[in-house]
Image (spheres, rainbow, N blue to C red):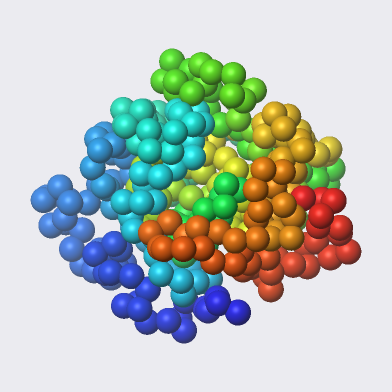
Amino acid sequence: MLIKKAQAIKFSEITEKKHYINRRQFLASSASLAASGLFIPHSDFQKDSRQRQKLTVEKRGEYVVQDRLTPYEEATTYTNFYEFSTGKRSVKELSRDFRTRPWSLSVEGLVEDKITFDIDELIHMFPLEERIYRWRCVEAWSMVIPWVGFPLADFVKKCQPTSKAQFVEFETIYAPARMPGQRTRVLDWPYTEALRLDEALHPLALMAVGLYGDILPNQNGAPIRLVIPWKYGFKSAKSIVKIRFVEKMPKSSWRKANPREYGFYANVNPDVKHPRWSQARERRIGEEGKRPTLIFNGYAEEIGHLYSGMDLKKNY
């Protein structure tokens, strides 16, 4: 298995130190950093979205893959974000001036109490940790990214869903004046995705607010997005403004657009062909050639039990 506990890997073996903030160093030097302008507090997120802004990472995540990291430049310039554009290399420029403050996240549906969170208050509720995950797109390309965020399970528990809740639905902001892709008919806007409740409660599921130790760039789904590493990327909704707990399986955006190509589960499975291409191999961005696709993107040991007894070709 290519996953180790974080403590089993030396920090220097994962990536360059310049990408991260050590907590002890932060506590010792925060005053000088603030004075020099190198540390950006949460309230100043994305005053200038063109500059990289550091986050305070509380701890290393439990799961760390040993694969070589995708270069930061590739991970932040080759992105799927149809709210801005269907062109992967176009999203960064089109989203450059997208404002993510003020921002609120509302919780609705089958919960004890409906509630709305301010994004900065929400970020401060949970210790931020880093998770280095494989990332696989349905278009047969992949990356390895160090995400920063907090477990989705912690957020779900705070929402207090009722016993009737079986699914969690996520909705992206609808702002066609600021998101030119939403002025097209490529999808039925706003974008929605969903998970089974037990999937949402799995420790690997992450609410991400950053990557490479930095605040999440606009083109990668700022200010908050899902990261579900064993599923194809379209399951991980970006720029989330609403979460609903429901009893019946929601029909998400890509399922409504093309149910033959995009199933509800979207688990990475090399044995299930996309109608227009094979999923058996993938192109790792930043590398030459292709590599075999791993079942569940290499996380079978961790999440395989969630689908015990299911026909994974029928439930694709």
